[in-house]
Image 1 (cartoon, rainbow, N blue to C red):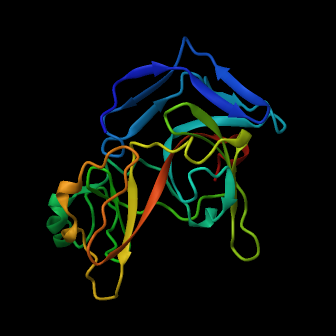
Image 2 (tube, rainbow, N blue to C red; image 1 turned 60 degrees about the vertical axis):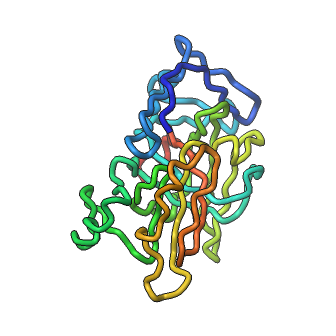
Image 3 (tube, rainbow, N blue to C red; image 1 turned 30 degrees about the horizontal axis):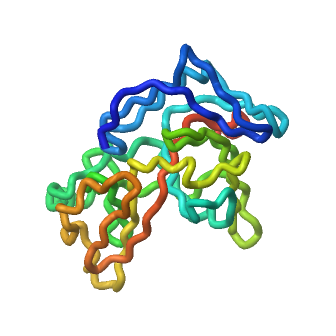
Length: 243
């Protein structure tokens, strides 16, 4: 995905309605390749912080762009299972390894040039066929300002886990998971169907890439596949900033 440079106004959905955040017109979204070189969200709408208009006026602090790997029905506004969501604190694209360099990755003991280690029992691909590092599990509880780089920017709340380890999530003002999914970023997790090591990036059909925005990542022989939605995180609640 190589989106055009563009300027736009961002609609932020908050607890008391839709708020247009003015900027000299815009939120500037710059990306050469989603994941492959990093999505830099230039929040000119945010000066130093963002204030939600409901729920006690939560204050958000802008951060370097992060990415959430989320699971759930696209039309859901809340749900359980946030304990299975992951977070990439750094854009995994520039840190990824091309499928064509998988043999070199193996020869290096599975250690990628960026320093992360490939796990043959649990590995990830993005929409251009880059092998990515795993996100961090779990996502710390708190409030996150998320967007799908389309129309809606809103607050995602990840609740602390209950006594059974289950964690709820919810989006403000009836925004859906689809609303804040960045469709151009595709990501999938691959794990072996058996324990014989048959699930390998060497089995990936390279002609399946790039995956179209909103499309499903390809199946891989010998692997179970789990598609994840990708959410862009642009700010966190200040009380959560130090996590």
